[in-house]
Image 1: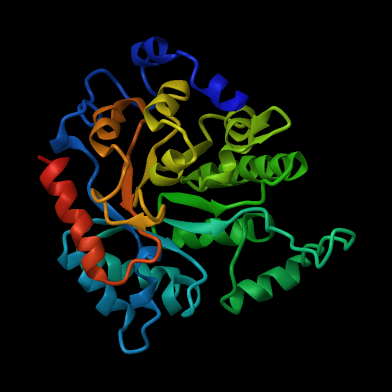
Image 2 (image 1 turned 135 degrees about the horizontal axis):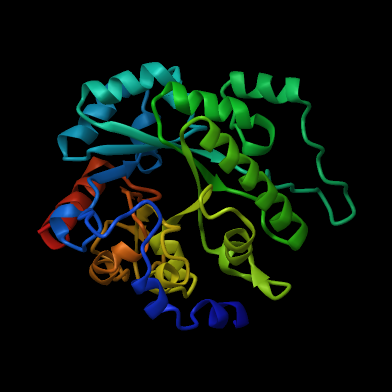
Length: 320
């Protein structure tokens, strides 16, 4: 596709020669040495099977996560137990800290996707601010269009340093432009509260729409110091992208990673090291991305063992 061809144009020499935002030549965090990679983290969405188990408390699940060596957490709202797994942000943060982990960021929705009953049906209007607040208070999913300040304030209350958009409507140029505006607002609001904002990709963000893609449009039309990307290594790979070339194209814009693997037979997420993602090459080139935090994520994980397998592989093959 033409957007991918343009995306992969040679920019490596320029990127490698530049100094990434926020780094100095004396900083050893991104030298490529395995010992200096970010701590192993986890996106808790991976373990919905445990968090939604009525026989386990939130702290029970968090202890299982800490016991396998995970040091940092990223959460996702909207579980069956409500926002922050049934707790206030500050309460959840205290449990995480007590177990020796850090709560880095939280996933929220962007521009809601509309699903009209038929092609001629009008899109569902956005709820009023009062209705949106009531929905959020009741434990329903929040989104950056309707609940931006609430999302930022709760992240700050929990001590998070990142607000992250899990997904946003981007099926046409109108949605892409609206999404981009929302992200610009979110980046500014996060900065004003001493935090940062990032956008997490799936596969569809790389589809060509009117000569570009949602991913390229967002990166090209937003402030590089306020809107960052959380690259999902598996979905980017599955979309035919090369994460290392992405880092070269937009150095320093990928401070967050989802370390996810894809089974080559089923094309579904699997434990890290059991699929087709070339993690060794990606980690070796991590200094180009500006990576600060990495989170294991495995959609559909069956148990804590799936995550433990990923942690073991990373420690044996990357963190050596």
